[in-house]
Length: 529
Image 1 (cartoon, rainbow, N blue to C red):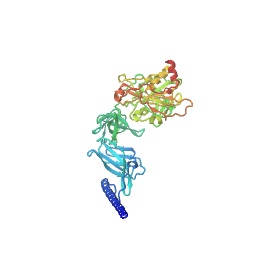
Image 2 (image 1 turned 30 degrees about the horizontal axis):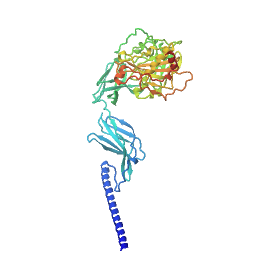
Image 3 (image 1 turned 45 degrees about the vertical axis):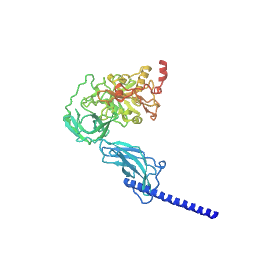
Image 4 (image 1 turned 60 degrees about the vertical axis):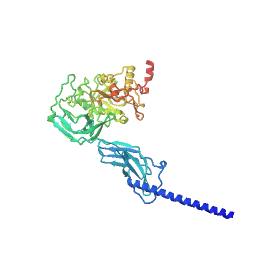
C-alpha cells in the first residue's frame, strides 16, 4: 500500500508540472502575438514594409547603431538638403521633422542614401530635424539611435522687382522690401576676379551710385539678417546690367592738385600699365615699385608723391579719379631713392569694394572669415623696387585700429618709419604685438630688420567710425628659406578701442604675446627696467 501510494503521488506531480509548462507556453505565444500586432501597427503608420513572419525581438540600447553624424546642410529660401556620414551596418535612414502644431517629431521620409532634401518650406523660418539609421530584419526595418535635434533656418528670398536705372553718370538700384530683412547688400561684378564682390550694405530699398566712368556694370542684391551682431546675406537676386556711355560720364570735373604735380610724362595719353619696372618708371617718375600678393588682385604699381594726399584721388596717369579708387602709394615722409629707404616702408591703398587697391589685406583678419586660412596660405608677398631689386616679405602681425580719439585708443602706427635706436624699435613693435590679431611663434623680428607695412581703410562700423586694417611684414633674411605657419594661432584678446568693446563687449586682457617674437627683447627689457 505504501509503495503504490508513493508511486501514484509521483505520477500526479509530474502531470501537474507538465500542465503548468503548457500554460506558460500558451501565455508566451499570446504575449509575442500581442507585441507583434502592436509593432506591426506602428510600422504600418511609418510606412516601413512588413512581412507575415514573427517580429524580431527588440534591439537593446547597448546593441543599437550609433546616431548618424550630420556633416553639412545646403539651405535656400524654400528647401534644405541635409547630409550625414554613413553608419556602418545601416540599411537606410529615417528623417523626422518637428511639427510645431502637434509639438512632436513626425516622420518626414525614409531614405536609402546619406542625404535628404526637404522641400516646400517657408523662407526665413527655423525647422528642426532628427535622423536615425534603420536596420533590416527580414522584411522589416528597425529604427536605431536618433540624432540630437538639428535646427536649420531657411534663408530670406531674393528681393523682387530688382531694377537698375541709368541717368547720366549715375545708376539707381531699386527693389521690393523683403519681410524680416534688417538691410540689404549690393554686389558689383569684378571683371578682374570674375566674381561678384560686396559693394555696399544699406538699410533701404533704393541706392544711387554717382559719377561713374564709362563702362558696363553688373549688380546683384540680397537681403540681410543679423545673427549674433553679424550681418548675413540671404538669397541673391538675378543680375542687372547697366551701361554708362562716354558722353554721360563726362559730367565729372577734375580738381587741381595744390601741392603736387604728377610725375606722369605723357599728358592725356594713357599707355597700358605693365609689370615692367623700367617701362613704368619711364611713364611716371613717381613710380617706385611693384607689389604682389599671389592669387589676389594685389599685383599693382606703387607710387610716391611729395605728399600723402594726391594719389588718394588721382590715378597712375595723374588724372583726377571721380570714383576715388586712386593709386596705391608709399608714405611720402622718407623719400625712396637709390641710396635710401625707410626702415619701415608704409604703403597705403584704398579698400575698394570691387577688390582693387589693398582691399584683400583684410583677409588676414581672422575675425572676418573665422580662421587663419588666408594667412597660412599667403604668409609672404613680394615687393620689387626700381632702386633695389625684388624682395620677399613675410607677414608677422595684423591689427584692426581706430584713428579717432572720440572712439577710444589711437595707435599712430604710421609715424614710425625709421628706428634710430633699440628703445624706439622695441616700444613700437610691442604696441604692434599688443594689437595683433594673430601670432606665429615660428617667426620673429629683430632690430636691424627691414619692414614693409600695408595699410587700408576698413569700415565694419560705417564710415563715421574711421578705422584701418594694417598688415606688418619683415624682409626675408639671408639664408632664410622655409616659413612655417602650422603653429600660428589667433590672438583671443588683441588690444582694440572703446567703440569696439562697446559693440562687442569684453576688454583687453593685457599683454600676453610671447617675448620670443622679438629677438633680444627680454634682455633689453631687464636691462632698461
